[in-house]
Length: 409
Image (cartoon, rainbow, N blue to C red; front, side):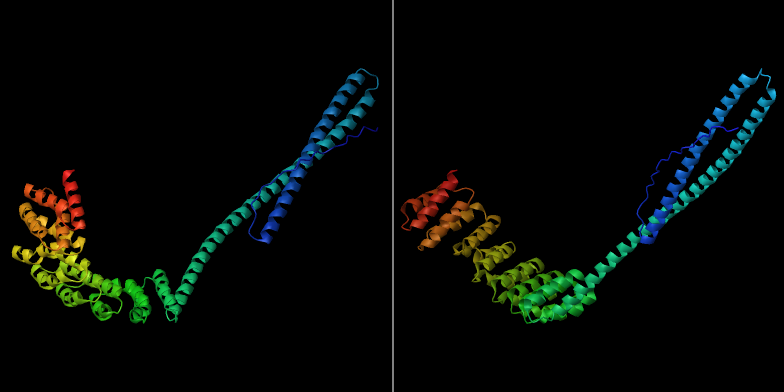
């Protein structure tokens, strides 16, 4: 007996698998192969599952057919034929059951193999992650080593440039080397010798780099000679360093000769340093001659230092006469000292004496100083009005008028 055949039509679905690109080509090929195997097995499993579903449908159809046959032939006289037909269908069912059992076993084996492939892929992904981490670590190490190598190359280049014939390049090399190395040995070996460079710009740059690093003994040996340097700005910078680092006796010994330096900036700095370190008695001895210094900047700072410590008699002898100084800044410095040392009445009296001077510039100075006072007596106001109205010198009239205006506010 021929039975209708049942065609099994498997349905397939593509399974997608996400993975992270590997580091090497071999690992990337291995991952692609694993992914392809997974896709094949997933398709096989789906095919087997579809076959099982088709087999179940066939069994169901056969059971329904048997039920109809049994219903149709149950009361028939052809009972023997019915038994044959039933035996045939039972045999077919047993064969289908056996086939189904084998297919189920195949599905289980495919699932196990798929699980193994997934585990292998996961292990490969973990290995790739470890390789990426190792790669990042190696990359960081390489970057650090590159920076070290680059720094060493720049340091070597800067050391070579310290001997360049052009002073501009030597000066720049000092700055570069000081930024690349903070080792005392490098400073002493490469930069300290440039304190004797023929170019003052190079000597100055070298001093600013190594001067503050020296001990007191090294200052004596390496830096002190620069107090006689031809460039005044170097002498000034060296004084500032020595004034902070040396003992008082050393400061007095090293700095006082520079009160006669040809550069007023150096003399001004020397006065300032000595004013901070020496006693009042020693200051009077050294600084008093500088009240007549040709540079008003030196006279001004000398007034500020001596004005606080001179005895009253010496103040009247040395400071008050400087009310006649030609420099307005010096006059203001004297006024500042006298406000602190003299009574308002005495200060006003000194200015009145100056207003009677036959030299016009001194009368003009007195008018300016009147304007600096906090208040004026009636007698002083009359003198100031007379200067504003009757003085033969126009600049004196203007100064007196300006002072009157200040006091009228």
